[in-house]
Length: 443
Image (cartoon, rainbow, N blue to C red; front, side, top):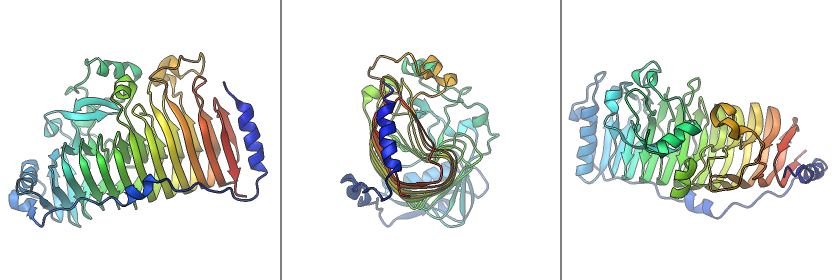
């Protein structure tokens, strides 16, 4: 089922095309996402300084008191004034905007006790009880983190990172699904994200800067109607620090945002394995526009957690300076689900240390064992992922190691992928277990 002949024929035709190929039309869902109304808040404000927060001293209780007071009054804004503030986990409530004034630095501790009790969360695609997030919410509506201030993560030598779980193998995933490892322990930490709302509706994250995270930066899970705008993430050099992960969430707008990350940057996920397949919570209707990637592993990344399905993704006008793989599609045999209806246009890449477009459905033996081997082909079942209907238009690449590298599955090849109007001196392409792929060049 390698079906290389179709690919070679399509590519040969593409090499002979001198004129630009007609680009795709903007999908219908984009207008609805772009025109989503952001959360609004009553004209009521409480400063954390008025509820007992002291600069340079642990002030979790005082900051939480301000959040609770605003929520009890029907909503409004919690003001974090200019200065250096220290906190443990904060729990956002409905109708509350946590606003960091310019010059404010809200730093979080790295002590496990400051993130207890354990709360419902998701860790690398598995639903668990864990430390959650440094700014956490569950079941809230109309919430925001805004302002020109900075959020600062703890040192990477803190207690949390010293006890962190280093990632879920297939065996670990099965252990969680069986219930044996559903809850984190104080000796094996499922890492907290920086901002991590769960089951929330109406989420705004605007203008803030996130510095030196120890894990994923912004990771809404099971959320609806998300706007992330004008955000800056600085976590390059720190491993496992994804920029933005939209996870089993619907209707998300990400714009005018700059990511400099130690892992994937703009990332779409939807859970892993049988449990997430049966739950069936997709990530869909996501728009990424007018954004910048400085450094990272994947610039725009789909996966690897794809069980609930990822569909209706639209990205345009993204400048990438030096990502390893600008467009990165990845899943694994037992992950399930997959991705479809992905449109990406007007991406300009400076230098890519890896393939400009990387598609990998196998993974590595260190995490997947024998399932990472291409053969034998596996029976198609409910955890067999698929990638189809993926369209890239007007991709300009300065330098890259290889233009396109795609590895599908022999039992489930990649289908219906178009890469049109490409500008790249490097035209090296490697394809394995793919169906129909069209690649055309603008020059």
